[in-house]
Amino acid sequence: MAKGVMLLVGTRKGGFVAESDAARRRWKVRVPYLAGQNVMHMSFDHRTGILFAAAWDWWFWSRIHRSFDLGRTWEEPRSAPVFPADAGWKVDKVWHVTPGRASEPGVMYAGVEPAALFKSTDDGQTWSWIEGLSRHPTRDQWQPGRTYAAISAAGRFGPRTTAPPGLPRTRG
Image 1 (tube, one colour):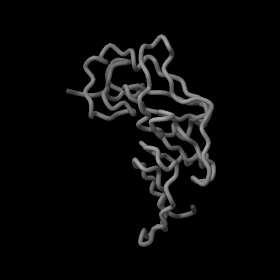
Image 2 (cartoon, rainbow, N blue to C red; image 1 turned 45 degrees about the vertical axis):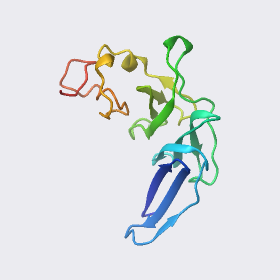
Image 3 (cartoon, rainbow, N blue to C red; image 1 turned 90 degrees about the vertical axis):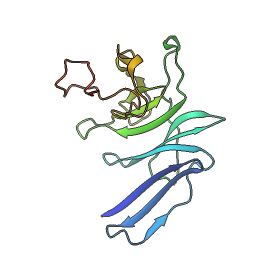
Image 4 (cartoon, helix red, strand yellow; image 1 turned 45 degrees about the horizontal axis):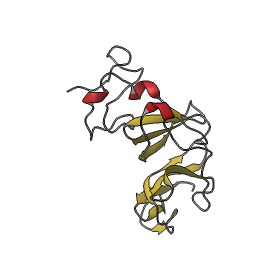
């Protein structure tokens, strides 16, 4: 959609895409995508034009769908974010899916419950667990409701910090 606005909305009844011109006076809302599924989050990757939807339902559980035509058709990638069997955790829900930086072609991130982060380097086709974050020594101190780096219970982690490497950038 050239020079317009696209609003992505996830609901318990599916995902919706609303489009408008830059003035935002009139909106066109497309019918629900992935109808009947709880769409936790939708994201558009401006680098590739791929639309992502983190969906959950009782039958298929949690997974990330991709659309290469702005929601007209959807595909389920080869694998969803899954912990290794020996990790002792199971992905309950994918809460957030977001593109990496412009300088990281193909990179996507997914924040899940229990609090963990997964990374894809192939436009969301496959996912790898970022184990170091989940095994961080402060994990038992994480507080729900503090959302940074797609981990709703941990805080911000990363190379651009004044704290020693590997320590959270949060205070308090």
